[in-house]
Amino acid sequence: MFYRNSTCVFALAAALLVTVGSAQAADDARYPNLKGQWSVILTPGLGGQRVKFDPTKPWGRRQEAPLTAEYQKIHEDSMADQAKGGLGNYPTATCHPGGMPRMMSTGEYEYIVEPETTYILIGGEDHYRRIFTDGRPWPTDIEPTYAGYAIGKWLDEAGSGRFDVLEVETRGPFMGPRAYDATGLPLHFDNQSIFKERFYLDKTDPNILHDMITVIDHALTRPWTVDKTYRRNLNPRPKWREFYCIEGSVNVVIGKENYFLSADGLLMPAKQHQAPPDLRYFK
Amino acid sequence: MLDGRSIGVAVLKGALLIATLAATVGVAAAGEEAKYPDLRGQWIGILRSSAGIPGQASFDPGKPWGKGQQAPLTPEYQAILEANLKSQAEGGLGDWRGAACLGFGMPLIAYGFQPMEIIVTPETTYVLVNWVEHTRRIYTDGRDWPAEIEPTLTGYSIGRWIDASQAGRYDMLEVETRGPFKGPRHYDAAGLPLHHDNESVFKERFYLDKAEKNLLHDEITVIDHALTRPWTVTRDFRRNPNPRPNWGEFVCAEGNAYVTIGKETYFFSADGLLMPMKKGQTPPDLHYFK
Image (cartoon, rainbow over all chains, first blue to last red; front, side, top):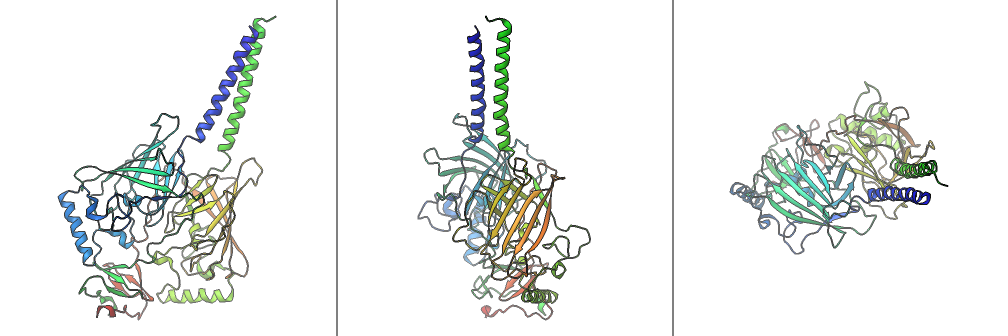
């Protein structure tokens, strides 16, 4: 009787200790390992610039975005203006942030996963994304930003006892105009887009990260979903570059006209037969 | 041999053992979590240590900007400061690059002009600067200085957590930041310069105030060839008590009123046209339009 009871007590003690120990171990390993430097994976051989929403298709028209007729025309007008030397619908050319979703198509990313917030550090014109995972409701008064306001939820979809998917919804009001790429492929000027994302590591390669993004936007005839993928730099101590958009920027908007800066830093026309800027304040 | 009392004692002893062991594990875990000071939240830089200090914010928050800082400059760099002040008095910028959204660099990015966030992980402490510069990464993973560092305005930072008060937890982050830096860099918008060799070294000690946990100190020492001796100041930051603060987006390109064309900087007027910054300034060379 004594032994049986004693055994029960110590078995209980051991079981509790294992439970406590496991809880701590699980706590450490509760989140997927997103450490390191991540770069966008692009399908090689596609034309145009590297910044594109669907990384498997060429930029611009060939993204085959499901634009409404009105926004198809806005895109065509943007490309026509650019063909003449204008900026079209691409404010990032003057170093304004790209915002969502362009900010997920650019440079090198770092993820910091904390229980309350997942941070995405982004170089370039855009700074960071803060994805709040502390269970907060949507605020009633959101200040317009290019990045939007993001609330996320960690999921254990595989039932493995640890989180494997970060589901995120990002809402505006956004600042704008925003474009998916440098051709000026537009988002709606009402700046009311909604983005739904699922971040997860590839099941067969933990150095590939997926960001399945769905855009819901009034410039689209239906939600547009792409699977953006990123590769982890295997160097555990990668270089983090500093990027200042203004350095090397060649576009200067004076009045309502865009001009180029020449190699010697002087103004030059961006369009054929473009008039020089109005210098009335120098008289 | 066994009675109810014995069983009761054994159960009690077992329960005590469980409690003790569980408590030990719990304390260890809590100790791990509490190893670092709580720097969470939004930190607002205290740009001037008392009201009425004239001019824009500068390195020493207790003194006016420019010459009022009484920086221990070498005569050569005192002359550069004078030249910058003269240029600004005439409407120019001197060699101050901040106005053109070209970045500020160390030490200006450590003042907290925009609300900052500090994220502490065992390997790296991140300072989200939220300004033209975005992030300071302070590596605390025990790495050595790399043999080759790419020049940046922010510099390369290695830190070390210290239990200065021997309380069993870290209470101070010691940081050294080295170049090569990009430049020119300044302490303030008056053009108070750092050396153009861009070889400054910054030594910092971050710690929470002993009496006020919502007050963060950053004691910064600058070692720079434009100085006759190391220059040390302490900058302070106050934590926003709102646990869910608003994080604005700083966009330098928005509302930037300066443009550099050739070797001259001009203003944009309210209607977006070019206008002179200096009296008698010539208009930009338009020979590419002929």
